[in-house]
Length: 68
Image (cartoon, rainbow, N blue to C red; front, side):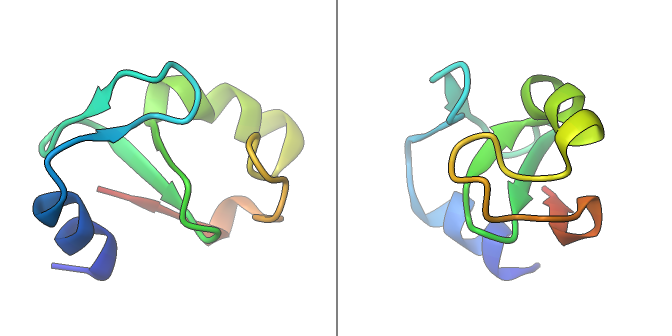
């Protein structure tokens, strides 16, 4: 289990920074290097075109993204 998964397990309610719906353990979620968390379906189209975090623009490459 990586740090992002541990954080998701410890916090009862984490929201996707795009749709603002709850991220549930077991969903297809993505955590960027900057720490922002999204549903994969919400953030993947943005990342594939812009290669950065849509919230803070700090994550500069697709490789900096983690899957939960």
